[in-house]
Image 1 (cartoon, protein in one colour):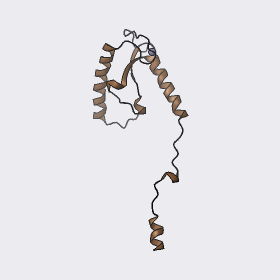
Image 2 (cartoon, protein in one colour):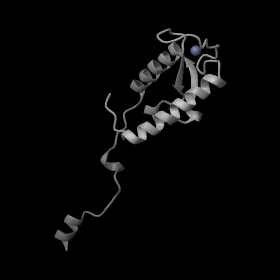
Image 3 (cartoon, helix red, strand yellow):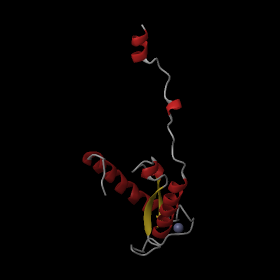
Image 4 (cartoon, protein in one colour):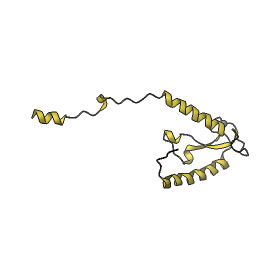
Amino acid sequence: MVSTVRADRQGQHRTAFEKNKKRLLMTQNTCGICGMPIDKSLKPPDPMSPVVDHIVPISKGGHPSSIDNLQLAHWTCNRQKSDKLYADGFKKKPQVIGNRNLPQSINWAAYREGG
Ligand SMILES: [Zn+2]
C-alpha cells in the first residue's frame, strides 16, 4: 500500500484510532452495519469477530480516527460494506471537464495581434 500521508500525521491518527477502538469495544456491543450483537470474545479471522469500521471510508473523505466516524462492526459486515462501496465506485459517472466549463477570458495573444 502506497500512502501519501506523512508519517507523523499517520502516527497521530494511529494513536487516536487505537484509543477510540478501545472506547468502542467498551461502549458498543452491536454491529453498526447489521445491528446484530457482536461477540467480543471472537478473534480474527473469525468472520463474526469485532472490527472497527469507518462509517465514511477514508477513501471517501471520512476522518481516519475521529470517534464520530468510527463504529463497531462484524468483520464480515465490514468486508461486505467495502465490497459494496467498491462496486458503487464503478457506477459513478466520470466527471467531464470540457472547454466550455473553463472560465471565459480574453485571448491576450490575439488581443496584442489585433492592437
Ligand atoms: Zn454485522
